Length: 100
View 1: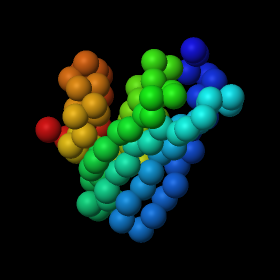
View 2: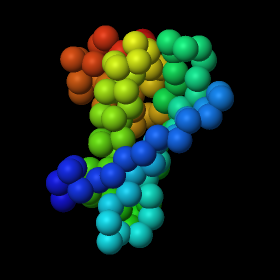
View 3: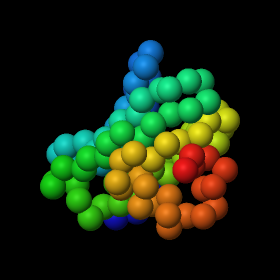
View 4: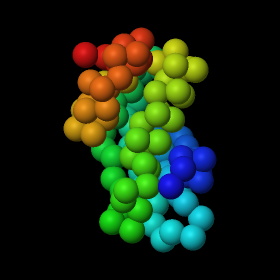
């Protein structure tokens, strides 16, 4: 499955945020949740993809969107979520947005 078939939206709250991924024709939604520490520091808390959506590149697409948004907003990400942390270790080019 190509990542272009994945639709990702962002739901913004005062202290939390949530990225939601859907694929037309597949039941369920993937999510990546964040906590806002400040205007420039966010924590990637949790990533979840239901069994019905696994193997489609959903989790990677969610993290890539998080990184792209953080770059655009001038934010740093604390990767508490194990999946986000593992992706950050694979992408040294994310050093500008990943807080160690």
